[in-house]
Length: 477
Figure 1 (cartoon, rainbow, N blue to C red):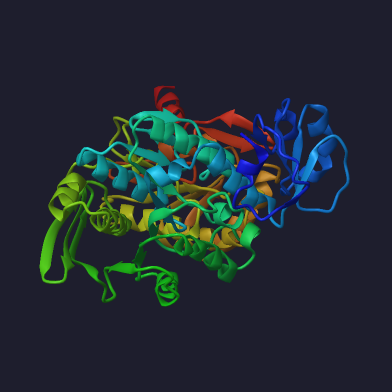
Figure 2: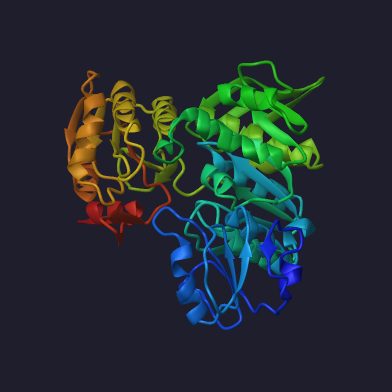
């Protein structure tokens, strides 16, 4: 593709020397003969430092933010190289997002389940759907591995192209706050945006809850229409600052779509969903009050996209849960083991309260907090778990480069403010083993924090750690 074609619509200063570009890359090690190298300023490295390496490997054009000098390639200066990368990637792959309906779901909790439910609803109506998110990317039923919730813009548009070429009509994607701030989704024409909730998380990146909310709001500057949970205080602020048509849903507040007569059991949820002068009976086989919110978000989104309410609510009755979200593990014991991704204060609160609604015995919670992440939530999660559980085992999550016991002690500070009995066990496998040993008839054991993950990050090493496999090994051993 010609350089002039790639830069069409991009705010840029360059030498106007046109040439044919063979590829786009933002990692100098992936530079090839005739490519364009885009200098991205990351958390650990600045692409401007690797210009000479990229040129040595064959780059013929270099996109920069800083006023740097080099020879051997055309210099293109832009005010924001991340946005430029997003624009050029869309052009490189011939704007596949414009050929499909893109649905973006953002919020602290619920994104993975809501995107999955929307996908299942649309597929129930015969549509071919792509999914992008935490548990992986999907083209129809084919699962593709993913490294982050929302891919970098180049890989994202590459994925869009692959989806469209294989007949995908709708793409449902989780939109993380990081991806919004870092312009990974810049310029994408979202047909619909969904907001689930906002609770404490990622303050190591955003610093304050105000900045975290401002990041989430960015999605609703890019949507044709939005679906918003107004039981959440942040949702009300999003509606107040509406930049596109908004549709609200709620249990407690007066909304356009209102859930009433909510009934929750171990087998799932039932509620009446009212809109204007109509009421629909909704059933979903995933327990917990949070499942009511997830079902509402998915249903309203599909209806806003033009699908009939009757088809939408029928689809929900047969919809399946998501791996690692309130997932019951078969153990052949007289107690229950549940795996959940809860790694935020609100997420932990939700899963424990959900389990307490149907637990006949004790609620035993095994959890930790990730290293190199927001430290302020650690004592908060300790206090939440202590107040709601009958017994807690504080252990490691993904300690990364932090000392595991220092994380555990910070969690314990919150636990000490409760009357809950607890124990500290650094090794997560041993912690799970201890929980299984003390489990009695009617107890519910919650393994919180890992969810769908099949690894544990200790130091900078990713080690195999699938809690389902570990439970099986421990019980058989």
